[in-house]
Image (cartoon, rainbow, N blue to C red; front, side, top):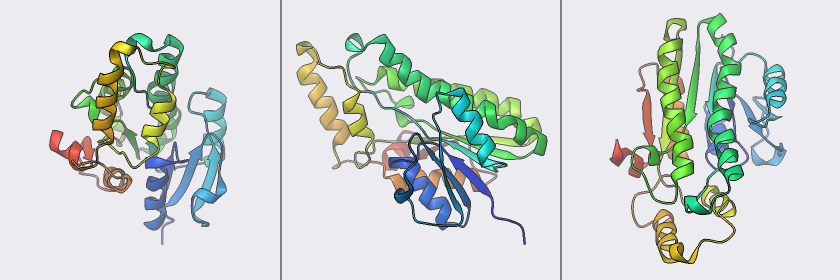
Length: 248
């Protein structure tokens, strides 16, 4: 009997990443759950689970993580930072932080895993982006840009890696008010929204948090990632959540 397959997932301290890790564990996979500061009590104890420290913006952290992880069968790039607010009020260093994590972190992780997948002529890479790349929303220009770049990167690289039987997929979640993502977005908001934007910003944030219309649940994202990894005929882009599916 062959050994269970192994998946490495980034950003597992909360939200989508945490539920993706749980989902793969329940399905019998070996899971390497990564996070900046490892927390052992977030996931159930299991011989199939390893929790490793990883900062996707740090080259040495990435190197150490893959060295400790050993061979894997799938990589799920889920780590990300939200940013909600008017562009004119954002500091350029904050903008760079968003791209460093959401875009360059994804690229760096992908670059690090490709050699082993190419040598083995197998492997799956799933990049989790967002449905805002399908239909834009206001006050999310920086975040949307960082995720749209990953979409384009993924679609181009998929063609480059296809000769080596490496599959690449995009999972695009919709609004997920029930996760910590909205909280994190608020924390990264500009220190003071200009008065000119106050009413508009409040209405936008209320719409984003509205649960009376279709939304996305973490379980939707976990199932979409599972489909991308395990079904060889799954499409390149997989919307996750009722609202995201309505846009596809």
